[in-house]
Length: 78
Ligand SMILES: [Zn+2]
Image (cartoon, rainbow, N blue to C red; front, side, top):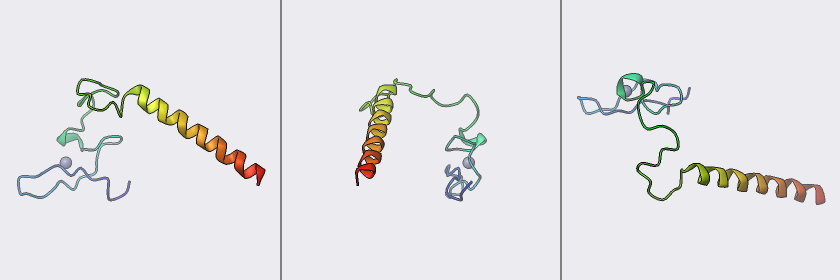
């Protein structure tokens, strides 16, 4: 895991926590990264712009695939 993957929670001394994060989370276990904590994936309770809804994520994925296909096609033509 790279050095950038540090917990980063604010400590009482004013610095930030240097401990590595829980796998797949942005905080270590003691700082909110415990299993089952936080909102579930694709939770829409605090929906703002819909950028991370299941539909939006899938639409971007689909668009990405289309772009890849057209790039491959262009390479074949050249
Ligand atoms: Zn921490």
